[in-house]
Length: 257
Image (cartoon, rainbow, N blue to C red; front, side, top):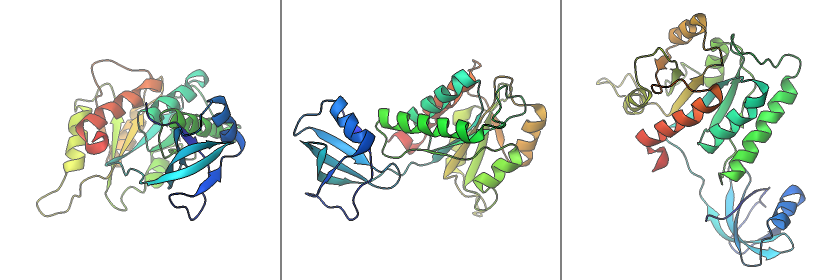
């Protein structure tokens, strides 16, 4: 089994042999897990730095290695239409476990759940779900949960579409004919003869709500250069679609290698 992960600030600078103490919730976590002296653990700040360590007791960690954080290729941003309240945190949890690098909440037109008047509280719940899932799945980086987007145009601004050409938007849609794996493979390997089209370094995966993406929204996405894709023969729940799609992307790219 891999070492447990603790999300906690790391001293700056830090070197092998340095010692520091876990505090707050992570000190309690070490106690609850009943770590024994000499057991290994990983401490990450959740963003850019992580260390391997040895537990010395009394919430104290001795650094045994400085870890290099992975750089996924391509990055995957999940644009998640807001699910029903009882499935919202599940959608975030599964996407993070499956490897999402960023999550964008989307107020789709047909979404049943709304964040109106409670956006800050709902956003905090998604952030907490992302943090917990990253820790449970032993990820060194906590995926960012962006602010809510309300339209395909808002999403284009969030992703910086058109600025670099490095982001490809794929919209999961049951009536699409192009399979997701084929679209991903084409995107990450794209390179025209004259060099006008660069290979994608990021995939933005759009997941619709329970009622599906409206024809108007789909048309707006396509005008922005997005490609509708089919995930498989079954129609998945909005809470599980991203996780399944991330698995398919991992199988046809370097993300799992």
